[in-house]
Image 1 (cartoon, each protein chain N blue to C red):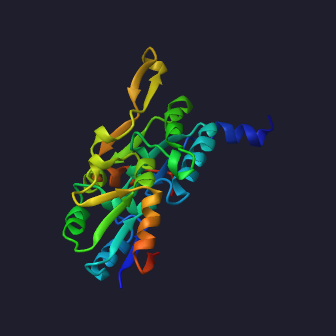
Image 2: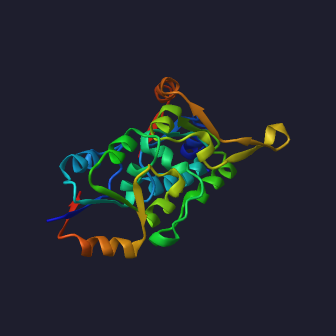
Image 3: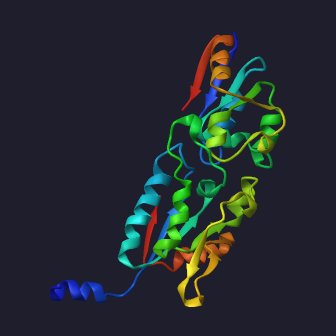
Length: 144
Length: 100
């Protein structure tokens, strides 16, 4: 490894937050965001996802796209845990405004290797105020 | 003259549904498609708007299912249609106004 690359590899781990504000299928943003997250997961950074506004619709369970001829990409969210992407922050107010509760969302888990591979939930409900604080504490924000 | 209005944007992001409801006449039909189907969900600020509308409100079943919802989550008075029902609505009305 060249000196330059070694420096890069030793670099400080940055906090990356992917902000999702669009519903799935109507536009390509939701799918593109998920693709970028999966690609970015290879870079060993401190990654979290935020679901605000219509973005919360991306995590609704029982999506069935058979009759619209579009790939159902919601199962890919289940793969995030295997890539150490296990912080999915969902804004409670956004759920409420849409008549949704946490029961409407997929159950997403990750295995904690520091805790005997115990399965833990990836989704955390946060208030709008907490989301505001989270957004303020990032090094990089990628908004979709 | 009766008009079929189609709305394909989420009402939480764009005001298309609100404006459509404000401009539809009582013998018109409004069909929610694509992200427009979120306007059919019960328990939102739009449930009251759709249930008090004089125009008939329809929602495309395939787009609703794609997004993880079914008839149990739809506001009272919103009728679900399949693609054949979509075609019937186009045929039954004199013109289509696609709110984009």
